[in-house]
Length: 459
Image (cartoon, rainbow, N blue to C red; front, side, top):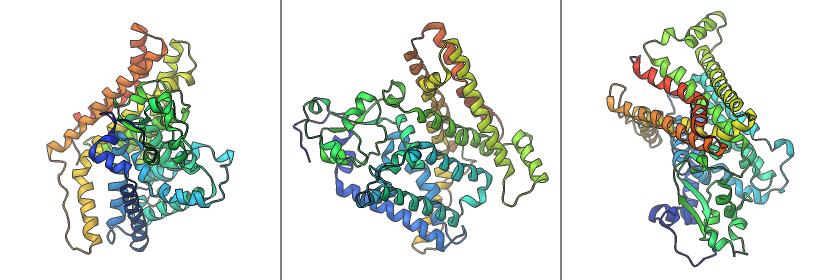
């Protein structure tokens, strides 16, 4: 390790007792990666051997009560791409990458839409269309087995860990939403200006340059594997203002990020408010997507297909894109700017709307489902007949306090929008007008939150 003569700053998380010890200790990181790899392997194995929910509560709990809510959503909202650093795909992939033929990734595969499109079509669409099928242990196991096999083949064939930056369905999501968090990897520029060894870059399997992260206000495809920090102590994981990377201009070319925000806002936040939140309210039967879905189910019944979910998803995506593009088109016209340019300039405000808003669901469902699901998975794994009951029910008023995250998300998004508009050389009344118009999707989101709060529960 290149030991630079320096004292870590107080806001450098690598200098903190627990976090620094974890990230800079290669043996500890290796141990955690092996544990996560074992969890993945065991979940897939048991899902194939015990294919139903009745015989296997373990696979579903690991994938859908641990991996998705905590390894991804909570980690992205705090430390950013920290899960990528312990991801079993990239962990094994680094060794495969060294053994493989080191071929350059073909140009036609350098398209983030391939991986992200796979996530949308292979996970989110089936989740609403076939909700009783996707999360069964056998289907979940096959899904992750296929994804894991594909990832490792790509790691073996192509150099510079190209799968992570171009093909990984989750990588595109973590790279985009990691900017919401309050940690940023960078280097002590005082020492980097005279550095000639470039140990941090040499240690990076992804061929990234950490000493440029701060100048670009972007960590790019950094997975926080921390190999660079273990190679040189001039590398810092700095505690920053939340969403600093979103609220300040970036010199990095990241046109995909805003599209990721829009799509996931549509298929997660808005669709779930249609299908799950309002779908469990007292006015369920009066909702247009419910009525249309029930009509389609009567006219064209398809085994296991949830027509209500399909219509809710379709309406949510259509409305989200119509509101976003419509309000952006009006705003861009007011300042005589191309819509595409305006979209890329201010669209970052949608990131906290989805990610911080998702914490309301995760917080309440930890007590309603996730905690008991994980405990029952543990009981099943050790052969115990014990069962754990949910820590709370919908009748417990305090559970609904997690809904405050929705309002935090709205305020957060409005603040980022205000900051982004400041870089367009607009001020005063014009800036306020753009803020009101461009925030159309925020007002729609807020309307759904308040509207749901005023309706009696159907649970």
